Length: 85
Image (tube, rainbow, N blue to C red; front, side, top):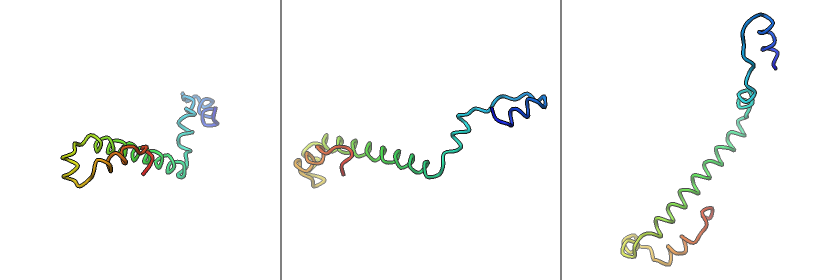
């Protein structure tokens, strides 16, 4: 238990012991936050890439002709893994 809790208890003030998880969460430094946010951003990029490739693969040949892309181009793009550019 923390010193603050002990002081409040001996002074007769009702207090709950501090939650250690809350104290730990506040100690995450800025570099760790940036790393976490970068990882989340990467996951969203991968998800978008996966969805876009599936959507392209689902287009019919007449739609591909409209946008000027061949079926071979789409097959090559759709065969890539989500983490590949």
